[in-house]
Length: 106
Image 1 (spheres, one colour):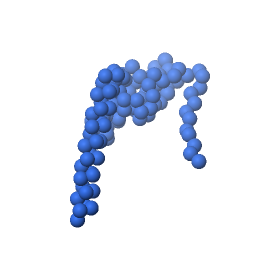
Image 2: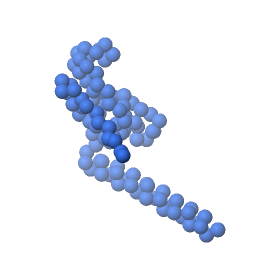
Image 3: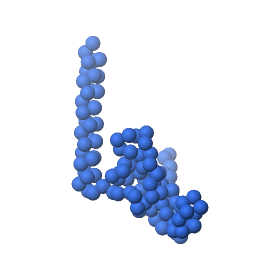
Image 4: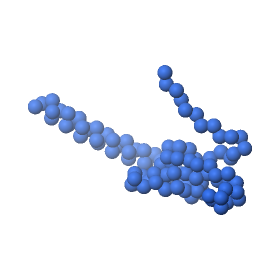
């Protein structure tokens, strides 16, 4: 039996503006952390959300950004990015199938 994991945010926190897995101009959000008001780590009086974003060009690079530094993709940018990724995967599939045929024919 598969179990689902649920994250519950307390009612007195503001909700994060962005979600895990969301593609942004900076990359893909892979982590979210809440900082309460008057937090010594942030030095901010207001509460805030910080996002761990993996760079879409360098998967080893993760940036930790404040919510106001995140810029979501427009629907057109998202569509273009997804279509390019699908095309890249389809090309890899064709190459893998050709390699598989070569093995089968020997």
